[in-house]
Image (cartoon, rainbow over the protein chains, first blue to last red):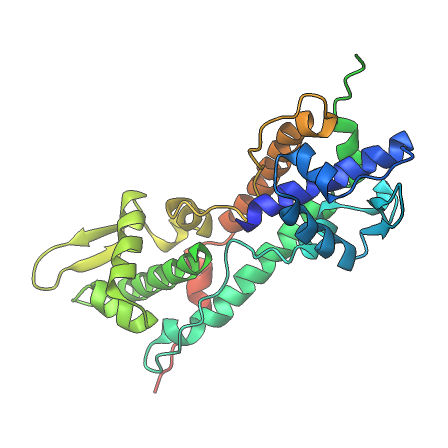
Length: 144
Length: 144
């Protein structure tokens, strides 16, 4: 269920963005984040590891330690998160061997490679247009 | 492996388009198509059933029977095939329950629904721009 990992990661990144905005003295850790998302801390730790590897977040040790964003919210977009998670696109070429006497069989790989490449470019351009700074504005803060 | 089903279906549709172009007296059946793709006839029959349900192909019974396109190649695009196969996009909202005291948890579903909807629209617009009549021009016919 790779696709849900993306939503979970956006959830994590928005939670970290809010923490930064609120200037909380204590940073959230994977347990706190997992509780907010209603998921397993192991899932969160795996995603944090990928986001960390991509340079989107960093860890701080110590009593108030936890994770935090490694860039400003205007410098992070959904393409960054999608690429960090190495999500597979929903279409790709098939890798069946060619049948020499079949014209479609001999051409399908290059045709589908071009289709898939265009599909991926289109997707990434769209996701790149969505910055964390825009999404954070859509989080409804309850001022009870 | 939903994503490979798309490439396999494009392969099928291009093979049918070529058959129509060549005006072959005998229509291909699932066994012939499966051989061209190097896949199992059961896989092909499942895809043919979905393409048929979407009105993209039709069957003809009898000695020379098999499957054929149900529309002209300029009337069929890759969006039609993608939609026919009911392919899941690579991202979608997570469906975890809300945590009432967490602003991100209460907003993430509507945020991710908007992101996913935009993503889907962008994808489908791209796939719609690719007609079978354009792809067929990229099939290299060996005139040996």
